Length: 84
Image (tube, rainbow, N blue to C red; front, top):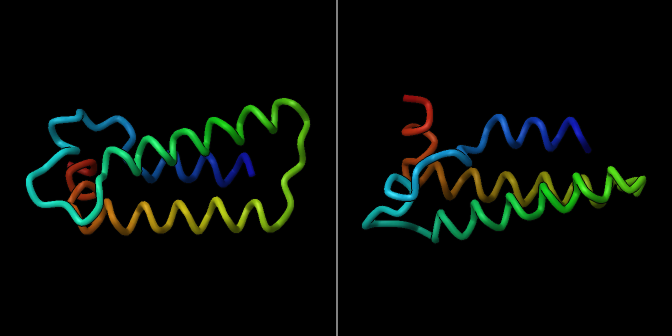
C-alpha cells in the first residue's frame, strides 16, 4: 500500500496552483478530484501508521480510484502541464 501511495503521489500533480487546475472547460472538477484523492491517500497513510493492514480489495479500490482521477486530469490537460 505504501508503494502504491508513493506511486500515486509521484504521478498525480497535487502541487499545481489552483489557477492552473481550474480551467474553463473541464470534464469533471479537477480540484475536487485532487482533494478527494489526497484525502484518501492521507487516510490510508494514517491507517497504515496505526498498524491496519490493507487487503487486496483495499489496494484495488485505491488503484482504481487513482486511475480514474488520472484519466480525468489527463483529459483536462493537467498531466501535460505538470510535466512542463
